[in-house]
Length: 366
Image 1 (tube, rainbow, N blue to C red):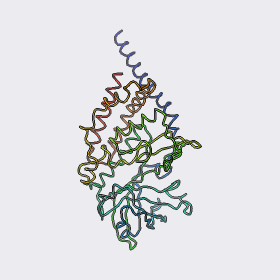
Image 2 (image 1 turned 90 degrees about the vertical axis):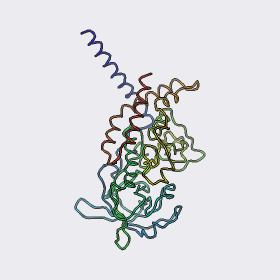
Image 3 (image 1 turned 135 degrees about the horizontal axis):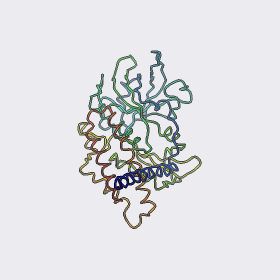
Image 4 (image 1 turned 45 degrees about the vertical axis):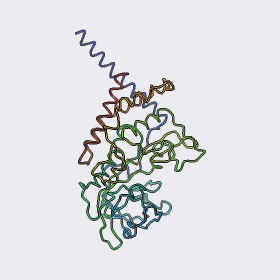
């Protein structure tokens, strides 16, 4: 009986310890990540939005990859009463690296004239700037969901959702099924895609402001816990194509009225180790040829990241706390994988398993 009580007491103490660490990090991170407000309508749902995009694709698809040209278009959405509404927009190319290996189709940026167009009663209410559309990048006609290029898009979208489930800041996404039409009504392509939340909209969710361009007078001074979250995020995704100074694939955010960037958020996950598939366009795979074998042990990385004579005890404790916070979201991340429409989940599943097992092992040794 005595041993049973002792075992129960030990179990309860363990649970309380983990809970206290999670609560501590949530409180600790609250100083950096204020409680998030609800996203704008476009990103408040997970359902797939049905759209048509009408433009002169004969011109758009032949633009030079660095072209700043904006092509007039109409974005058509369908209402609950089986009606449809059209919004005047403009399209431009996006994704400089993708332009090197995209064929037949191109990644798209959609511009709304928010000064002249009333978006109040549309799914795009609250859009604060242009919106990135992650497309299948290659192929015309009806593109099946099983197509390798569509699957790549779905893998990238899943990565954003996994990072959100991990408990760290990231951009939201919204699935869309789009029919792309020429001005004469002819169908150019039809495929799944997703919208990526504008950076300024994400910033507003957290009561912060997005720095659109890094200036000399903008000082990046992240508090330690945010720096840890950034490192864990990029490690989790196997994402090295980022610049912590905010120049490349990194979003810097400031508090209103302040000049110091207080937080940074990674983005652009299409060629990360978590996402890239050897079947997806040989050029892209050669561009980022990661593997779990050469990435190293996550537990050892965590140990090394807090070792050294110049690492303070405070930083070391915060690192363990943030890592514990991430580990507490393991089931939520697994649920994202389980619900993902990606057909081959083996790479992301293996990555998640190795990441959490490594972190868990190191935390248990503390």
